[in-house]
Image 1 (tube, rainbow, N blue to C red):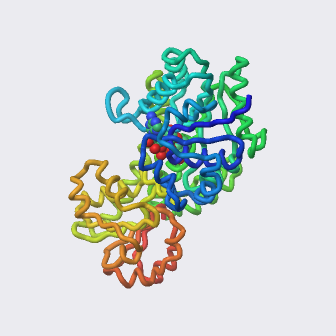
Image 2 (image 1 turned 135 degrees about the horizontal axis):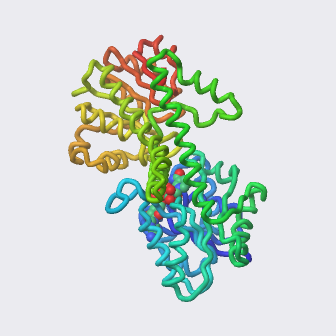
Length: 464
Ligand SMILES: NC(=O)c1ccc[n+]([C@@H]2O[C@H](COP(=O)([O-])OP(=O)(O)OC[C@H]3O[C@@H](n4cnc5c(N)ncnc54)[C@H](O)[C@@H]3O)[C@@H](O)[C@H]2O)c1
């Protein structure tokens, strides 16, 4: 079975880049990415590819090459479903904010809406691919909806979780550690569907990097991978607090530990805490699934990863207040970085939001600089917390276009995202423009302590 038309529902951080790479690598396949968000689609269609809605190194070049050739962005979801042989569902699966499972379970309403729309529109057999991260056994629910409300056509459901990391999405998609495809490998139709998706990836990924499993293993592997990654960050962050109390340095500890080949050196960087749309929601989801199956010890084990991360964010902000003579009331504090990590404009669950909120509760005046995040996003992130009115957020938080402007006349500067450009700043100039003593807090272990102390900063870094 050869796939000719692909539709992807959801033009977000996963759907957009993933489909752009599939279109680039499979020029004979038409790829249409659809979304109900008109603004997002019109940004994807912006004449100037630098204005596409998602910033990822290398993405705009691929969009320039493939868009209009075999890559299309549209709000016409029905037509794209109708024409597709294979439909990827790449919509958001946030944590539920209401009802049963509130604050823990994945909210599957967007997934269910997609399934119902596919069932209503499809008139010929389709392969439906779960690209969104989903609780284990969601494919069962999808199949139920599709088989009972559809037009009598056959649906094969595959799980193909996405392992890309924001900031390196294009490299991760071009050279994946592995591609995982789960399907009904016990039936001929299931095998055929799995092979059709394998053939798409085989355009650029070596066959031995394409793993095929049953659907449940595939769904659970994605949650497991994110839980393990987040657990490493919380583990090193737990040690960072111990380092601060004992005179050990967390970078030295991480290096010594990471050289053990059984442990490995990646994901051992201590920081103000992990953010991003996935780690927290996926672990909470895992905790919820475990609890609902009566596996309380399993649930408690994974929940601790989140508890540690929340503690790290609070601890960082509390340390700023303590260091600034126990009060930041009326003091100007510059936050450098708002994105949850470098090389992305994504701010979901960014540690910066929580640090800013903590400092605002202590009556600080906040000035933010981030090279890629838009001003309105910063206000929207703070408003979403509902801690204070949106007028108050706009009054007490200023967003500026330069790190020098942010730092001028400030009592303290905090580095909250590890953007490369912060390494190259003229820190002497920043120091001169600040009130004295000039405090510098490094939440990412980005900056060199000695040179900053030589300039005259009072320097604090996580884990030392
Ligand atoms: N962001 C990541 O780094 C990452 C990595 C791996 C997996 N994931 C998973 O991928 C999924 C998508 O994540 P994302 O970051 O791309 O989310 P996103 O919020 O950026 O994009 C989702 C898009 O789906 C659209 N959408 C929702 N319902 C729709 C509907 N019924 N019809 C059409 N469009 C609809 C939304 O408008 C939105 O633009 C999530 O399950 C996430 O957990 C994300």
